[in-house]
Every structure is written in structure tokens, then in C-alpha cells.
Image (cartoon, rainbow, N blue to C red):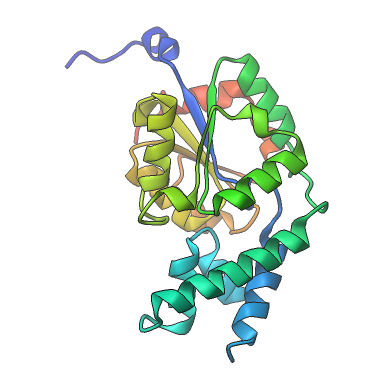
Length: 230
């Protein structure tokens, strides 16, 4: 196989797949309050440490990790609905984009990058947050947790986003904040930029690049990841 030159690499269509919770908006505190409420009502007090371990995973995974594998699917669905109703009530009119997000989204659009959202969240949460931030039109594709059978660290969500964009996984960069999300991106065969909004730098070492804020990032930085080995 003939290796591509840097010019050939640069000419390939590229995409950025954004995680939402903890990357685009600081939803973590609202998720914690909602989970704490629904679990406390069922006799379990969720700690912040346990919450952080599960942050970014699908609801069914979080519920089983907290209440055990023997819980019935009907109960999982009831808990999940209760949690998401509480979450949407808490976040309504309270969302602001994290530093650097809006600027980078606009810069990527100007630079010719396609953009998608790849989130474990239910689609109702996705649209509520994107519309409240005024950035719903920035994304050419949405892949929500409702559309896959496995949550992160499975790569299903990110691979679905790439298919919706008609972009090969190797031409995608994922922006993540969660350990499970970074693993999912790498399993999908994608580059990954991790931001330390939720986890410390050492926990995100599997990513191709780790930063403390997206204010540091430009399209050229993301373009450069495609020339990195690994």
C-alpha cells in the first residue's frame, strides 16, 4: 500500500464528532442531581465518585452498575424516564456552552469540516441542549444513545455518526471528556481529542491529544492529528 502524502491527507474530507455532556455544555452537575434523586428514592445514595465513573455511559449501564444486574428491564425504563424528566427540568434555561466551544464550531465550519454529535444521551436531551445553546444547525448528523444497542466504551455511536456523515472513521476526530468516550473513539479507529472538563489528564492518556480547554484548539490543530501515528 502506498503511503499518502501530507497534501493527499489534507485533501481528504474530514469530520469532527462531538460528545455533548461535559464537552459542549457542563451538564454534569444536573445529571448528578437527577441520578442522586432517583437512586435515593430506591434506597441507594449515589456518591460523586461513583457518578464520575459512570459519566458518559448509557442509562441502562449506569442503572445496572448502581443497582445490580438483576434489575428488570421495566424497572430500568421507569428509572431512566424518571431521571431524564428530572434532568430536563433542571437544565431548562440553565445551559451555557463551555469555553471555546462556539468559536471552534464556527471555525470548523469555515474550515470545511463536517460536524456530528455522538452522545449517549437520549435524543430529547440532545435537542433540548443544542436548541437552548443555539447551535442545533451546526451539526450535519446526530447519533444519540437511543439509536445504538451498546453504549460507550462501545464504538457503535461514533461509527453511526461517521456513517451518517458519509465519512470514513479514519478521517474523523472525536472530542471527548470521558474515559469511556475516549476508549470508544479509539475502538472506532478515530483520532481523539480529550478535554479535562470531567477527568484528570492521566485518565485520558489513551487520547491522541489532551487539553485543559477547547480555547486552545484550532482547526489546524485537529488537522494535525491526522498526521500523527497511532
